[in-house]
Image 1 (cartoon, rainbow, N blue to C red):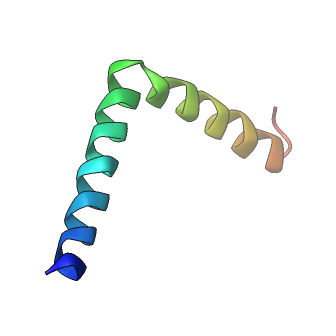
Image 2 (spheres, rainbow, N blue to C red):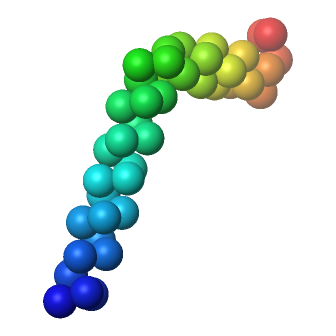
Length: 45
């Protein structure tokens, strides 16, 4: 029984962390960094 609870606990922790990141606006920061890195790779930025 303990073995079946672990994936559920990990999933719940992941969802809580994801909601916290979305509510703090982290997605915008990550997207901004990704665009900067991508533009640097192709030599534009």
